[in-house]
Amino acid sequence: MIVLGIETSCDETAAAVLADGRRVLSSVVASQDAVHAPYGGVVPELASRRHLEVMVPVIEKAMGDAGVPLHDLDGIAVTQGPGLVGSLLVGCSVAKAMAYARRLPLVGVNHLEGHVYAAFLTDDPPEYPFLALVVSGGHTALYQATAPRQYALLGQTRDDAAGEAFDKVAKLLLLGFPGGPIIQRVAERGDPRAIVFPLAQMTDQAPDFSFSGLKTSVALHVKRRGPLGESDVADVAASFQAAVVKMLVRKTVKAVLHTGVKRVVLSGGVAANGPLRAALAASAIEHGFHLHVPPPRLCTDNAAMIAAAGTVRLEAGERADLAMNAIPDWALAA
Ligand code: KG4
Ligand code: ZN
Image 1 (cartoon, helix red, strand yellow):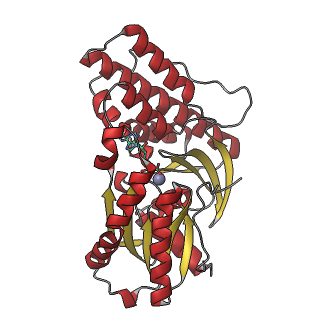
Image 2 (cartoon, rainbow, N blue to C red):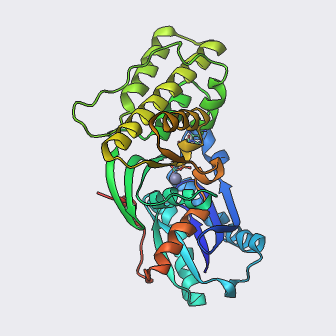
Image 3 (cartoon, rainbow, N blue to C red):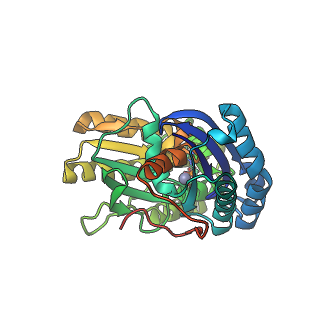
């Protein structure tokens, strides 16, 4: 089965062609970073306008790169939510138009399930059941995948998403946008033990996350210390990053021990973070679980992961009709 995947949930316009749910024939990602950088964050109106401009050329490039003519497609999978409504609408409208014109089966995919499915595009796909830590700009959640298309929510952030914290702290340190990759780079020259930022302690047992207190601690530190020199900024970046990593690893290990599930998928944009990947890999050895981490280009937003999740749903007979609409707050699991 050859599936075209389409992704426009936030600020990446992406299309990919996937064969048999596993072989990436092409994957095109048009980043809007340059559009939003002057504002230090994604501006929704600019995002949807840019998606409109580049959506068709991005699809044409994905089809061309794959060398697949339109009539060889067996289906279309599009991100239906969660995300920015104006952005989602662009992808959904194009997908519906193509499905109607070519009489192709269409399926709407949850963006977070897409992130999970990035792990199936590697040489080491996970077996069920597994835990999935999805850490992105909009979401931070820990799921248990019990079988294909079946998820239970184990824990999630009570305030900011991990990626959002990276972006906000980068803004605070005047480092630019998007913050994650920049903080990682600046942190390489800093000491992760320079400042001990306190981590939120949950009073109940839920493996929930919280990052807004950490962000506030960084803001207070910066305010108290006044203008920071280059090496101070590097120390703050490294210490902040270490705190985020510690929180994510701690909760994931707790969930592994609690559920007894010995397979963990790490995905989402923040999973591109080197120190996080390394720390979770070290924990996997220490606690005896198998870690599946897709390469960074599959962790950040892309359409191959949407096509992968969509293929499973198309094969299971799921179909969206032309009344399909964007679901900006679509939860993957309760
Ligand atoms: O999954 P994604 O591409 O888009 C959403 O679904 O939100 O995630 C984007 C987020 C941004 O907040 C970005 O700063 C963060 O992922 N990110 C990183 C790194 N690369 C991207 N965070 C930490 N370290 C990175 N290397
Ligand atoms: Zn994402």
